[in-house]
Length: 305
Image (cartoon, rainbow, N blue to C red):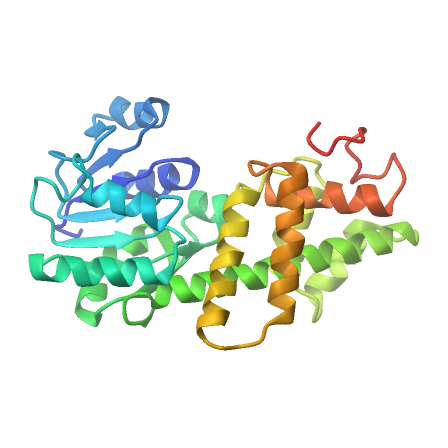
């Protein structure tokens, strides 16, 4: 078992599952979240928990927060994790802009605090099962120290380059995810409108070259069931696609597909609401392509009903 203790900041839907896996494996843990309700399950287990990080123990600080601005505040704010107790490593597992983590690493280096970015892919189901994929950017020796902790939360842990590289790959991963989810949903609706069985279509595509996470997980488990509960909001997903678009601009690369996807997903967010699940786009696409009564129709002209 690793000797490092962990201060985990951000125990929302994903973070709570990940932090719980650390605790279950015997890691000495403390947790931070602004929501008291999120802290309650950890307090019930006798795990130190608070709404601010200053004063809580933890050699390794792990952040799982919405944006790099939230990460900076959680670390460097007046009651932040770096305001009091000494820390060895900061591991940002959020999906954030690469420039933010690179700047943070430069800022913390003189204080002897190493930084690793390790965003994850796999969604709520992956967090629950411990099968997430972590893409890690940072110095090899820092990665080697933190890897045992990451492996308690993730099924695949890959060192992808210097600090910031993890956030680059995650943003591009979510661009690919956005493309396949939207296109697979359109394909499913086209086929259903022509009289094909959606379950059969997904079985065929997942066995062939059309296979994707959308055909294997999102559509069968979160769209055909009518639950629309994959666990990622349109607000945060559009933020991720925008990060990818900014990276394309910085790389001086023309990306008409990426640009079109950002506009399409942003329009869906504006129509459905930022807190709607990303799989809810099936309702929006279905309402425009199909008549009422299809499996994608919510029974109302209002996509938020």
